[in-house]
Amino acid sequence: MSQRLFAEQAVVEFSEEGKRRLAEQMPHRSITICQDETFHPEPCLVAIEQVSNDILEEQYSTKRDVEAWTMACCWTYALASSTGCSKAAFSA
Image 1: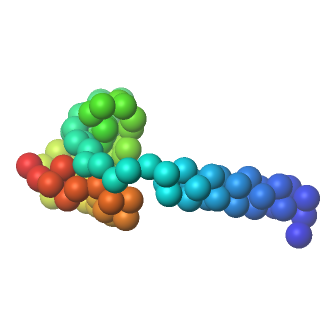
Image 2 (image 1 turned 90 degrees about the horizontal axis):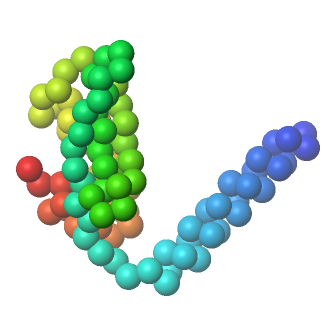
């Protein structure tokens, strides 16, 4: 394994271990995800966590309908569900 790949793998492992260690200490909580859109040069669907203002997802889309938002937020919902966030936060 090259030195670069070894270093990259070490960083990823350190990150994953840190997230696991911190997650064990954090209480589960519900989050609210807000929808936003930006236009540069085409529409970009943006999912933002309301309290921290963290951007959870950005995805370019030619459409801005329910189906487009559902597809854009699938990964975000899966991540939130796996970390104990409430599904109700994703209700329209």
